Amino acid sequence: MPKFVIEREIPGAGKLSEQELQGISQKSCQVLRELGPHVQWLQSYVTGDKIYCVYIAPDEEQVREHARRGGFPANSVARVIKVIDPTTAE
Image (cartoon, rainbow, N blue to C red; front, side):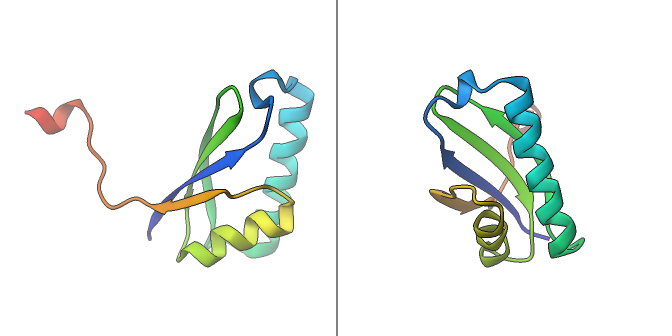
């Protein structure tokens, strides 16, 4: 199943409280339950003004549908072609 990285522009994302992040996570999980098991959220990285999310989904449209239903921005959705890490150098 393809993996996607989603860039969400959210001004002040790094200053969101734990409660606010919990609420966002709960909404995301609710939408994922509605979409069914074919879309999975792996994890997200919160930076100053953006949140980068990693999802597994059949296609980009399913990722964008999750964003629409959840009310989340999806400023950029990129399909992961390859994954490298320090062991790639070996």
